[in-house]
Image (cartoon, rainbow, N blue to C red; front, top):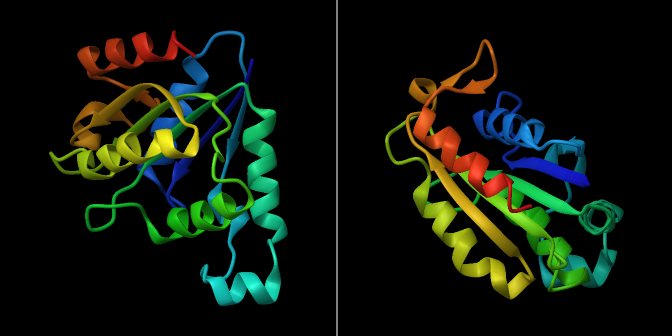
Length: 173
């Protein structure tokens, strides 16, 4: 299985990237590719820019990465209750190539924050909107209080209940 994983964050020290990487490496017999959305940075989307520029190569490359994968893991960072500007821009450009940008790939989606909210708002946004973009979401997990539930030294989720829930979702990919 070709597994694509990434954080919907452009932070170089993203806790969501740590979580996505951890989850992806739990999937047995998977060929894992972790991508960084910073590699797909583009001008802020607008219809005017789309008219002037056409489809940027970065959006085409991102869409192709999704197409080449058998399954996807995304961990969403939350900025003011919603997607990060970096992810939203990438999403907007890519959805103009094809609205069904997730291409019916099985997906596990997650979110985490340092605080107790666990980025549940952005996770709910992704759950609600995902089907419109051909996201076949097989599981969703919010990890609250990241530093209390994840060991940065070992790169592992330490909360047994959350880890069991994650494993159950990953088995559906």
